[in-house]
Image (cartoon, rainbow over all chains, first blue to last red; front, side, top):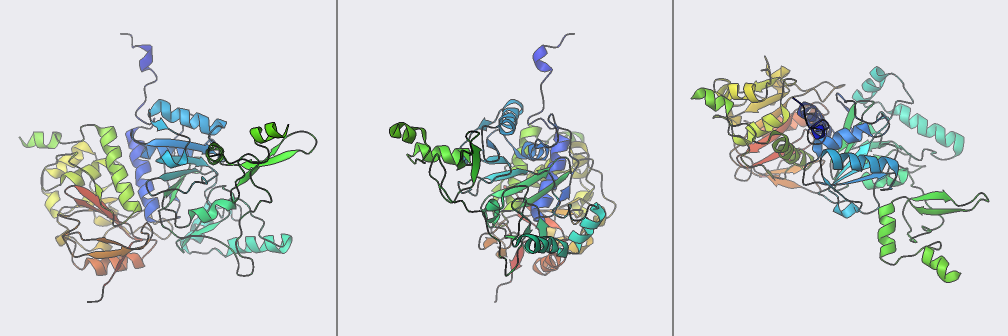
Amino acid sequence: MSTPATDIATYNFAYLDEQTKRMIRRAILKGIAIPGYQVPFASREMPMPYGWGTGGVQVTAAIIGPDDVLKVIDQGADDTTNAVSIRAFFQKVADVAVTTETAKATIIQTRHRIPEHPLTGGQTLVYQVPIPEPLRFLEPRETETRKMHALEEYGLMHVKLYEDIARHGRIATTYAYPVKVEGRYVMDPSPTPKFDNPKMHMSPALQLFGAGREKRIYAVPPFTKVVSLDFEDHPFEIQTFDQPCALCGAEQVYLDEVILDDKGGHMFVCSDTDHCETRQACGHRGHLSPDILETAR
Amino acid sequence: MEQMDVIDGGFAAPVFDAQTVFRAVMDAMARPGTIQPVVGLTQPPAPLSATAGAVALTLCDHDTPLWLDAGLQVSTARSWIAFHAGAPLAATPADAHFALVASPANMISVENFAQGTQEYPDRSTTLVLQVESLTEGTPLHLEGPGIETSATIAPTPLPRHFVEQWKQNGARFPRGVDVILAAPDAVACLPRTTRIKTMEA
């Protein structure tokens, strides 16, 4: 008996089988109940390489339903390879609606940024995490780091931040900046710029973190205290930028540097493409906006 | 006849029903004190309720030893869970990943269940308590992660000395159990981080 060719690539809804989803769902519930604690889970092989967001994809696949609206960003951008391919993946295997507008999304899977537009209570932010253990580069043994979390022994992390100060005169960590969740667990916020750390604190949205290769899931429930580690005399600070976005003129947002030529020309533009496009649509202009340049010419 | 009770009454659409119930439980766990509707997706045999049955089918399988309270232990519901979820029964409450409690008022004390370890606090029991209502009991004022300022929930019936037991559960953090309250048409959750504020009389 021959099977129609179209049946060959038919997957369960959202790709994962139901037993896998149950396993991930149980891990998510434990993660929510113990904010900042890394719950081990039986990460599956996904049809993409490790490092492409397999942890985030598995978390999204376990929570997504037919009514969800999915947004995927990669360093704030909706239109780069990783974001486009993951968005296409869920359109194919779950047939869900997708959007690039932050406000319209119910699930936002992110690689290393938190959108500039404030998140709301109905939204879930799913982070792709490469190395979930904040202490890993200080202590390579899992048995030791697990003991350190168990005993709430985070002195080593403060020594690391202190060594930054001793060497550079300031805390030089700019991304994956360690946070303490609800006064208990030290957590890696994934390699987001430290600019985004304050957005995690008391966020109305649920934040879920998936690390596929390292097989860990963790979570920050809504309205949870997330405090960046610092010292009284060296308080935590976020990055600041000397100039606004060159395309939309936004200030107080995270900017990416874009090289324009081989003579040192460069510009700073919003890392969050949706935020930038929305502002431009509302008439905001930066000094390198196409129509501003047109007028000048 | 009994045979049919056991085989019927599972999810009509297992994939989407499980997803719907999970999202309700996840939202309830992330926002303690909120009441998330779950409507009649399963028809398990008494005394297991439709909501508790739906939660069990959403979260339990052959990987999760299950503890049943005395009423469920002797009922057809036991076979129903075995047939639909395939979950093994835990020998003791301390071995259980999930506990289904049809009669919370007679429940053994919370400390008998798995509490997890300091290294692996996730290895603890999640209690699914079948309650009659989430609004008609004694109001509990809640605070903790997931709650912006404060939240109130009034489940009934609850285990004896629940407020005191819950305080002790919180003192064990990060160890401790989490509770899913399964009302006839909704769920609410008490993760171990939620504190019940004791009101002055």
